[in-house]
Amino acid sequence: MEPALKPVTKALLWVALCCVPASVAQETGLRRVEFGRDVVPILLERCLGCHQESKPKGRYRMDSVAQLRLAGRSGEAPIVPGDPGSSSWMRWITSPDPEERMPKDGPPLTSDEVFRIRSWILGGAVMEGTGGDAALAAWLPRGTGGVAPVEYRHPVPISALAFSADGAELAIGAFREVLVVDARDGAPRRRLPGLPDRITALQWSPDGAALAVAAGNPGRLGEAVLLRATDGSLRTWLRGGADSLTALRFSPDGSRIAVGGADGVVTVHDAVSGMRQLVLPAHSDWVLSLAWSGDGKRLVSASRDRTVRVADSSSGEAVSSFTEHGAAVFAAEFNEDATRVASTGKDRRLRVWEVAGSDSKTVANFGDVELTAMASVAAGVVTAGTDGVVRLHPWKSIQKPREYRAEGRATAVAGVGVGERVAGGYHDGRVRVWSTADGSRLAEFRPFPGLD
Ligand code: HEC
Image (cartoon, rainbow, N blue to C red; front, side, top):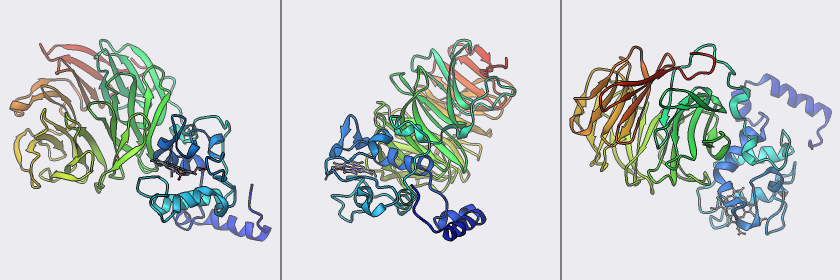
């Protein structure tokens, strides 16, 4: 339903809309608010955890669009199209009383979020698309309207790679999809499509049932989701918005998941409901990797802002920060008892430093090679070198890695178990797997359908 505007006013609005640059339009509120793009991410991230079938607080459910419109215990209409003043939502989300305000027990929505919801209701609460019973997440602008190629004509640089917990399968980031292959020979198993262009991070849940995926098109769209490993259907929506998501990691027990973005923000979510539990103080540039300590109490984040930070994973408080790279930091991992961190960056050094204290110093370092990615195994860390070498660095002698050589530029890396096997993903789309026991190459393949 559209508010009744006089034709002249309408015409003026139309002029304003078409002739104002997008950024200005957004600032002045002239940009049309779209339900899927602008409103659904807020609801999924900040509301759904308490208002779904398993936990309908206030007897109000938001897990489908049909339910969103039905009153809960109060009997008041949550959304009255065109009339924010009569919509109970507006009262709940803007209440000055923190006891009453939604999201209950959490930080209030930002003024931009409130503004988007208000503008959407004012504009008639239009829900483009159909199917009132569909899950709320189905309204997200997924895959940016693009679909994964049926057959690839060119290989894609491998940007993310992960072994399943039992080591039988490898998940590989491709174009708008994740490819799951047999880790022994690269034989195709499944395709999990419907994602933004570039897959930036991948991890299997500890129980093997789900794959966590971060993906995005920088500056346009980002999404972090848990997909069912069997068929790629959406299990849990974690976070999304107008910029790429760039890092993600499960806590060791699988109950929580940390997500980092190009906006520098690290969030921690409940891995079942997707509900946001914590927001860490933002880095000033992209978060490029995240890792948890073995006891789940600490989180380390590496950023393009040249810093690595260790934070308490319950309170979000800073524990330690490391600035010696003096350049973008690509990855960081904890050692077994989380007393040390190994990190690597644009400065071409793999550095090891003590977590204690606020001015952590390098205690050991390796190399003059750009190491673009890192994975953790019990024996140490595995790195991907732009010289084509995948290295396994034992914690005790970081400077003396075991090397697995190949042509090209390694861009992603994965290890399994205590480090029996390591895999490297390459810029030319190749994936290679080695046995660390004898250094033999077990497999080499390009995973893309249509290419061999
Ligand atoms: C941590 C849990 C939690 C979160 C998160 C949360 N709510 Fe609630 N919500 C509640 C509880 C509890 C009630 C019942 C409160 C009462 O009746 O006083 C409630 C009640 C409501 C009601 C009233 C239903 C009715 O008709 O009685 C609305 C509307 C609502 N919430 C909307 C939201 C929105 C919108 C968000 C996200 C911005 C949100 N909630 C996030 C816990 C939550």
